[in-house]
Image 1 (cartoon, rainbow, N blue to C red):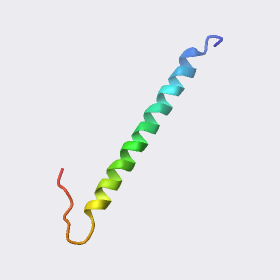
Image 2: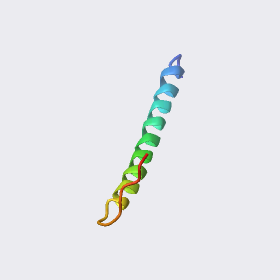
Image 3: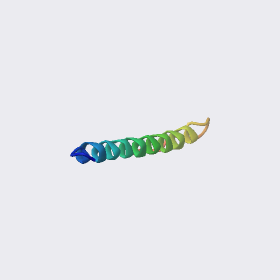
Length: 45
């Protein structure tokens, strides 16, 4: 990679972490939205 392997693989790692975080946030948001239906209380963390 012409001496740029650290930057290339580092950018892949950062992208992977951010995409994983996005998935976790979406799952958490979906879970919270399910609990916000009328008559159902939100879970306490």
